[in-house]
Amino acid sequence: MTESASDTDEAPASEPGGAPIDFYFDFSSPYGYLAAHKIDSIARLYGRAMNWRPILLGVIFKTTGAVPLLDVPIKGAYARRDMERTARFLGMPLVFPQVMPFPSIAAARAVYWVQDRDPQQARDLCLALYDRAFARGGDIREPAAVLECAAEVGIDADELAAALQDPAVKERLKSENEAAMAAGVCGSPFFVVDGEPFWGADRLDHVERWLATGGW
Amino acid sequence: MTESASDTDEAPASEPGGAPIDFYFDFSSPYGYLAAHKIDSIARLYGRAMNWRPILLGVIFKTTGAVPLLDVPIKGAYARRDMERTARFLGMPLVFPQVMPFPSIAAARAVYWVQDRDPQQARDLCLALYDRAFARGGDIREPAAVLECAAEVGIDADELAAALQDPAVKERLKSENEAAMAAGVCGSPFFVVDGEPFWGADRLDHVERWLATGGW
Image 1 (cartoon, each protein chain N blue to C red):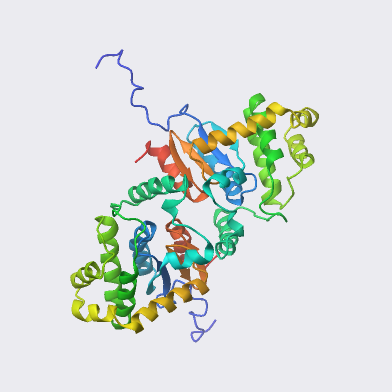
Image 2 (spheres, each protein chain N blue to C red):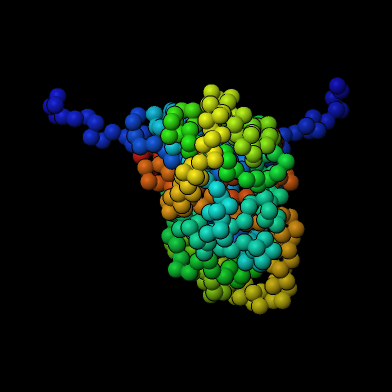
């Protein structure tokens, strides 16, 4: 072993500067909200950037034949209870909005438009939207609500309002949704770390160990 | 406070001698196999007895409208990968049997018959069946295979063979399955601890904390 031997050849996958974590989620997904705060902090701990990738589960469910979890007999009632218990387990507030699931198309379009300009602001917007919907049980269906959240985190609401009408922005969400399906995304939240897919807020333990060990 | 005041009024739910844990599972469920060993050891740690309650997911899915996980587009491929990764995460062997999901009716009937005679032997039989199916990728569909597993754990195979033909034993499984549905069981594995339902091998952390704290 000489001084010139590189000691970075076997750097762990979790080395700062590793590939970004892809985080797919529907703004209408309570488990997505619960996971969003945790993955944000895990990514920070392991020095990973994050791609916040809102999707529309309704479109994906047409392919997988799934129906919204809360609408499934027996399972729906259990899921609501599990969401509330999981929130308490994680020490997070959870207040269900009146309509669930709800259309999240305006929120998702906004995020992609912001992301191309300022990824950090896109992250702030995602958390602001999620917190309004599920930490406080608010309504984020309409563009007006999305613009309010955007203004809270310093985004120009007028510019964003115009962008939400832009066919290119609409097309962008459509192609992102198709890309998510092509990547095998089948629910929310869904993470991809160095090519490895993880589905569910209950897989954050796997994500964390994957980042710590580079896989197993 | 006098000496005669009972000091058991506020005994923690996890006190040895607390109510048994209901463990519902389909022998055809890989996540059920992964959970079986863990819940057995968790119950022991917290001094709880266990009710091993095999069910037939196929019957329950007729009510919930669910289809076998591995058959769902996109989700099925992910699930197989997740099962294998979860097994490695838990440090357990996992070899898929050739046919999945498979009919587990003979195995389930056998367990209830044994349980009424010797609960400890029923537990041993459950683990023997699961290990044959998923630790070694064996076939436990036919009565002959179930009888082999039974013999391994000291059960009289001839007596059991006769029991498997007994209409009362068949009826018993049917009514157990109906009771499971009435209790809200919607998948495998499914646990009920002091009235609280937990679904999934990935809820064992919740089960464990529930036993430790009496709920939250």
